[in-house]
Every structure is written in structure tokens, then in C-alpha cells.
Image 1 (cartoon, protein in one colour):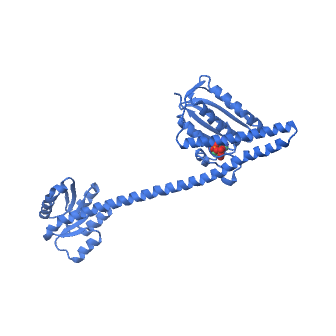
Image 2 (cartoon, protein in one colour):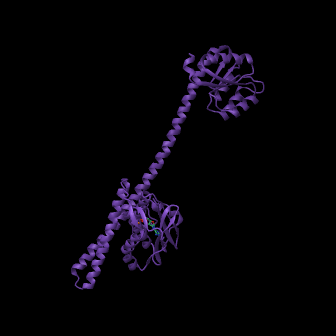
Image 3 (tube, helix red, strand yellow):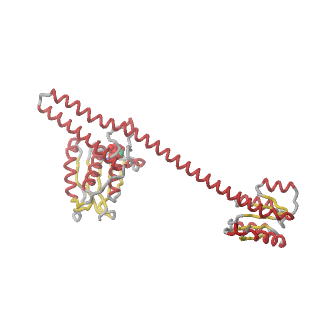
Length: 384
Ligand code: ADP
């Protein structure tokens, strides 16, 4: 009999003022359990013991005690250790008190002249307590799972909403250059003036380039989503990257009347081991954004060394970004100016793509901005 319960100690707190009864109960329990019994004989001892440790599997209590009784002991237990089963062991106390005990949550009431009931009663109580614990654990897990599902649902709804905004932006973004191409080709066919012809061709070329950017962004974001981004490291001459980026973007700056200039660099650092194409793409994304959100003033780019490696920057005198939007604009499909109220074009992909590339290259991307004054975007590339 003892063997089945021996693998686990039974930690009992027993409130009893009679030494004889204490010994009797102890002997009975030792027959069946690997017993670890703490006994107390009055209220002070009971409170003190519970204060020191709540690690009991069971509380047993005589009914009549010197300065309190089992009902009071039970109520204290209910407040402090409500999950520990409580059994009253007593001489006859009358039906009323016994019912009170059970009403207050005692698991059982065992008469001292029927001690044969004690062990089965304890086993039932322990089983019940374990089932209650398991149930509570299952309920807790269920609540956590529900919470997770709720968050996942909210995320899915948000992502669904963002994708709808993205699709409507996208169709606008694609339609605008396509209309440009169609409309100006029509004009080109009819035009006779060679000056006008040149202007139409140049508009068609701009529209084609816009379309190319959109398609490139879509391809990039799908590569990122499939986690297929690959970094090809090589020895990159920073000055050459700057020259190339400036040559690609200068015409767009000239057209808008915004100045593009190279700022701080370091004479000691001219080469960097990194992915040149991705570095160029990040730069072009950031500088194009700066141009898009800057009506007058300048956009300056450069780099400096820091403990993060090389920190590149793109600074503008544009509209700036409110602090509450500064984090979310790096998420895909996110724009400060969403939906129908959009004043600036774009698909909300550029910063998400840049962030993903920078992270893959081992760096970080962040920004500082004051609405109405401008923004500076930074990204770091570690020095290998
Ligand atoms: P988009 O194609 O819409 O420009 P991005 O991911 O590149 O997508 O940028 C997300 C949003 O971040 C932009 O729509 C804009 O609201 C904001 N943003 C990005 N760069 C700047 C900047 N230099 N100045 C002000 N706002 C910016």
C-alpha cells in the first residue's frame, strides 16, 4: 500500500493540541505515506507556520483548540492557501458545525472514533486537489491561448487592412505612369514640332522608370517575404557608390529645384566590405524619399565612423515625421499619409525593404526628425 504513495512526500500541517491524537494520526499516515508532518497546537503556531511556508499538500485540524477552532483555521487557510485541501479530525461536534465546515470549503470531516476513514478521505482530497490544479492550469492555458488568438486576429485584420490600402495605392501607382505612357505616346504620334516631341519622349521615359521602380519594389518585397534575401559581400569603394547615386538622382533633384549635396565623409575610410548593390539601393531609396518629402532646401548624404561601424546618413529639409509615426514607417505597406488622404505617391515599401537589407547586412536603421524642419535617416554597416 505504502509503495504507491512513496515516490512523493506528503507534506501535512496538523493543528492538534492532544499529543495522543497527534501520535495516532501520525502512525496511521506513516503506514500509507512518506510523511512530512508539521504539527502546531494553537492559533499563533498555525499563523506562524503558514507565514513561513505555504508548501503543504494538506491541512488537518482538530475542531476544538485552545484559542480557536477548525472553522477559524479553515477561514485563515481559505485566505492564505485556498488551494490546500483541509480536513477536520474531531470527536463528535454535531451536524451543524460539520455542515458549517463543509460549507466553508473543508473537504471532509473525520470522526476520531472512525479513523479508518482518514486515509481514503486524504487520498480523495489529494486527487481532488490535483484535478483542481490541472483544471486551473488548463483554464490558464486556455486563457493565454485565447489572448494569443485575439492578438493574432487583430494582427491579421490589421495586415488585411494594410494589404487593401497597399493594393489600392499600387493600382494608383501603376496607373499614373501607364496613363502617362499612353497619353504622351498618343501626342507623340500626332506631334510635328521636334521640341514638343523631345518633351513627350522624356515624359514617357520618366513614366517607364517609375514603373520599373514599382516592379523592382514588388520583386524585392516578395524576396524579403520569402526570406530569400542574399548578401554578396565585396570590397566596395564608398566614393564610387556616392558618385553613382548622385549621377542617377541629380536629374530628379534639378527638375524639382532641390539641392543634392555630399556632406561628411572620412579620409581614412574609403573602402568597405559589403553588398554594393544593396548599399546603392538603400541610398537611392532614402534619398528619393527625402526628395519626395522636400519642397525646398537640400538633401545631404555622407557617412561617419562610429562604434557601430560606418554610419551613413541622408538628411533633408522636408516635411519631417511626427514622433508617433517614426517607428511604424519601417513596417511594410505603412505610410504616414494613408488611404484616400494621400498627397504623396509611393507604395509604402521603400523603408521596409531598406530596413530588411540593412538588417541582413548586420546593421541598423533609424531616424531623427522634427516635423516641419526635416528628417535625417541613418543606417550602419559594421566593419568586418
Ligand atoms: P513610400 O513608397 O510610401 O515612400 P516608404 O516605405 O519609403 O514608402 O516610406 C514610408 C513612409 O514614411 C512614407 O510614405 C512617408 O510617410 C514617410 N517618410 C519616409 N521618408 C520620409 C522623409 N524623408 N520625410 C518625411 N516622411 C518620410
